[in-house]
Image (cartoon, rainbow, N blue to C red):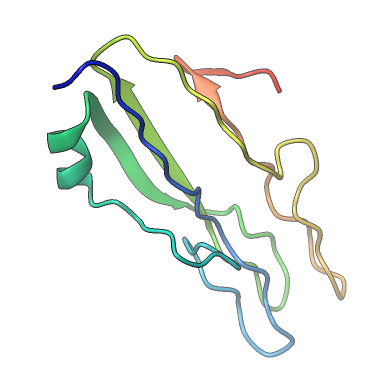
Length: 117
């Protein structure tokens, strides 16, 4: 491992439903030229361990057609590090339409406690 490192990844989530179908889960909505780094590559190249990577069940809201499920991505740092997180839907939940219920708020945690915006 060389001195210093940078790891950058866009955060995926769920996309809203259409008038005729549920929204897709765990996608990078409206992004291009980004990647979902395979866990094996990330752990080989960086002092990080992925503790969990899963769909966030129940986060897409409730309605005739629910929105897509968000993503849980939990890392363990194996070396001292600084982190910057640029995310949305932490203060305001994804809005529903046509009588459905809003999706779940997103969350960024540090050592199990919510990080302050």
